[in-house]
Length: 152
Image 1 (tube, rainbow, N blue to C red):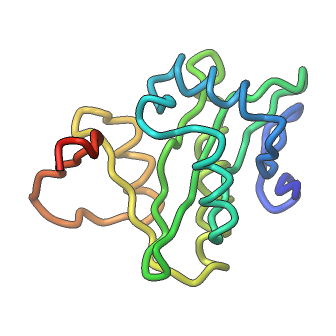
Image 2 (image 1 turned 180 degrees about the vertical axis):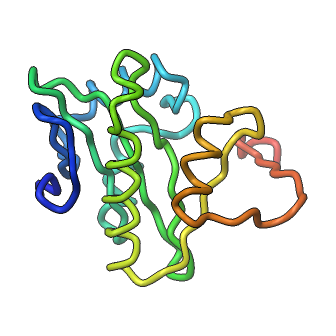
């Protein structure tokens, strides 16, 4: 689906849903921006599994058809989790992140769940963007993860 008509975007850009053919370009962007990698479990099958379970992976596309931004929404049927949200550094400060967040929140609202995002404390531009979009600070806690299931 093309979401470009539901938000004000600069000329030459569009926001659309992910398809399996996009995986190599998405992985490249995530590696370049530090948003994710297959080592973190961000592989093509996991993406498809989350989409099949009601999630979404939104892509920002430049006029040369390159993927320059992503927003991955997954859910546990209680909350939508917004992650892997970012725009390639070369394309920042054009309003693309704001437009992508607006579309992401429209999609999340349609799904009907609360929306949660985790952001690094030092990522001031992202914090400001999320605060302007009505995100509130959840609480002062640390987040832990076990990535290697062999440790369990």
